[in-house]
Length: 241
Image (cartoon, rainbow, N blue to C red; front, side, top):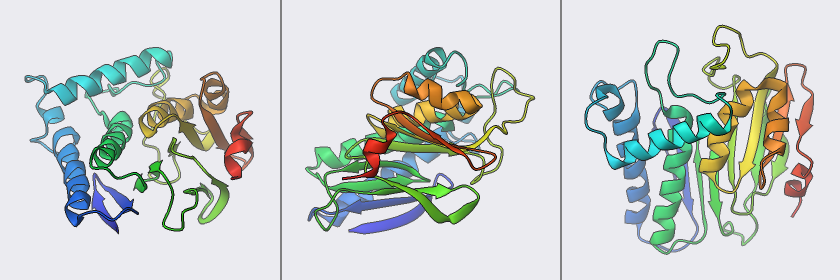
């Protein structure tokens, strides 16, 4: 069972290998819709847009995660924009994917694949009983896959400027263009962990891979503006079964 829908301004693909009711697939997509309704800064009636009204438990959780990530990245991650507004999209996507994966597992689903705009969480194996594989795109030619990795249940998040333009900035030097690297793919214990550090690592430029190297249980693959790749020391272990 597999479907792709445009939600949160992104193509979201959910594939369930196990034999389950179609209602479970619908429940996952409904969850993503509810996240978009609550957390989008572009929707006037969203909870984010209505802040600082009374905060829901989910909003408190996301804000706490954002503050934790800001501290752990020495300020390279910050959901507060230069104009003072709040945009939690740099962390909400990974948080939502992880929650969707948890929802599936609570329903007894063991073998699944969730991809929301290139951020991915897998579980179990694919329809052929093999390891799920994830392709890393060439940022200079999106039709080309330059690396294939096997996350084995870990989360994958890619941050860069090639897909959505210059939507990321360095909170420490907000007026300076981020042009050292064009993409960085981070593999972490789960998609939330990968996602919350990928944005900060991109903002760090060439130092992003070094930062990911310092985190236990994480790997990264970065491509700079000249097309040169840099990877963490154990990244190669993810490229073979």
